Length: 96
Image (cartoon, rainbow, N blue to C red; front, side, top):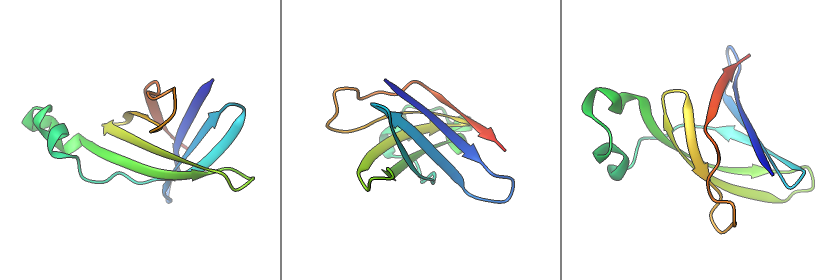
């Protein structure tokens, strides 16, 4: 089972936490410029709300999880390359 949360602190960076097979991975959530494909799929007024996130998340035991998301406003859809489960449900960014 996969679950995840993205949080934004009032004066800090966004953090992501993903639970996969009962192991918790954590890392930074930094939105970068959208891909050309993503821009082509999005109408002009909405382009300012899209981006991509590529994160290397780390568990307490030192293992890592590479994750990639496409973002739109405060939601994201993504996956873990090379894993059977490739698509996550959409996540809401929650402010703390």
